[in-house]
Image (cartoon, rainbow, N blue to C red; front, side, top):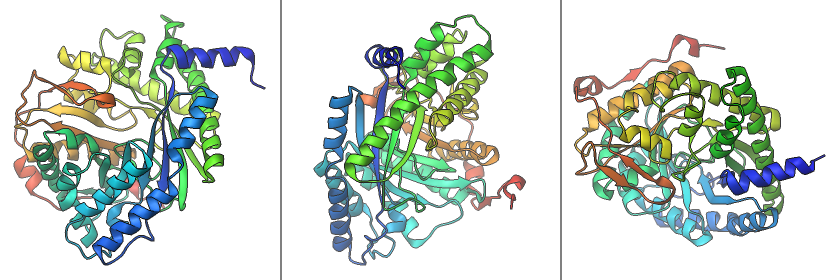
Length: 449
């Protein structure tokens, strides 16, 4: 039974504390869309996406209006294109991305993810074609998101893929003035049911079509912690856990309703504290509420570990269908508190890397100087992949080398992507390290069978 007090608390969370459904994401399998002819393959993809998702935006808007719960984004994820379209004989997969972009525009979603490849252990012909196509694909589309999984705990780190992705990031930045890099993620241990962009794709173990929901509420957690200011950390953890429980229950309600109205199975609720540039919707503010003068100060990693763990515990108690990433995101450009700390020099890339050991994802939406080399970007990817592989967790890199920009400049990406100061990168070269290629073997604890 839902009490009057619970209803009033939820209304307050929505109206004053930035609680929202960050995304309803429809996952669509493209495994039946492969054709040897490029045009036939593009037509099949377009037809399937527009047919399956034709009512997605309308249903999301109906639920928002009827329930009074903000639903910020409606999105689509598809089977990794390198897998679904490998039989296509075209050398350039850019037209496939353009077909996805047209389909996304037709149904009215803001992003479509899945121009992706899984290359943690090596490349197929389709993988190679997709990776070569990423820069032009992102330059010629506005809604398509791309991701490449270069490492896993089971396989180790594909350093040939890591080296290539450094070059792909640089070329994408050149063609798009950096903007395209905001839609490009390099993963270790990527998950198959992530509803959040830019890393979402519809995994090969997923059903034909599915609804996944991503919930977010940094402002809600921050507000709850204000009420226990100065109290011990066990009280902090319990407060976060209870708050995450309430937020997840709301997400499950919306997911079940969307599933029923669309006639599509409900997959998971991803409870991730995904910030926005809006004041009061910041993960950094939560960490500072725990007693830090600034995010980036000593103690930041411990505070983030507590937050991430409590969020997961609360979410799991609220739903049997918690999945995706579920935890705390720390994108710099999308979090007002992170931006403030980075601009003041209190938050460095090295500290962010340490924080990724205990957060949900990794180095996210970080603006780099335009002269950052491809080899340095590859080495950053390798470092972050190592954290994921050794710790058996998902990690990711979404960095943006902004052409012509230097440390101290600020770049504005617009909308939810926010703005960010250009952060300093260690100038020491990693060229010879990256040039070795090959594969860093999987750790011994990968042998668990």
